[in-house]
Length: 104
Image 1 (cartoon, rainbow, N blue to C red):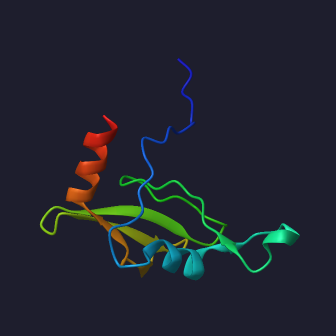
Image 2: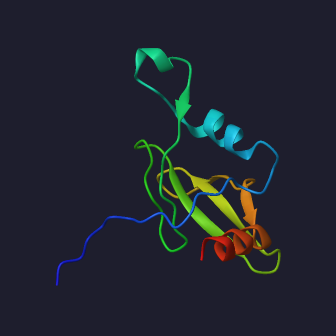
């Protein structure tokens, strides 16, 4: 049996917190576009998982952190040795439940 490593996006959802989270992540961890017409802009395209670290731009790792007590999923940003850099951005369970119900 052949196993494929292609991912399917179930949905795209901006983080619930803090306000301006996408902009914060992009400015702090994004990498510059190479296209001349996009000079000065950053991009941050990555897949994240709860069971494994990914590698982004050969310098960072991302991993989802579920906190059942707080009912949140935070975006963990790490260096390549998996030392924590940032965990302030995340999603509320309620927001994810709402978008999943709408999608399904």
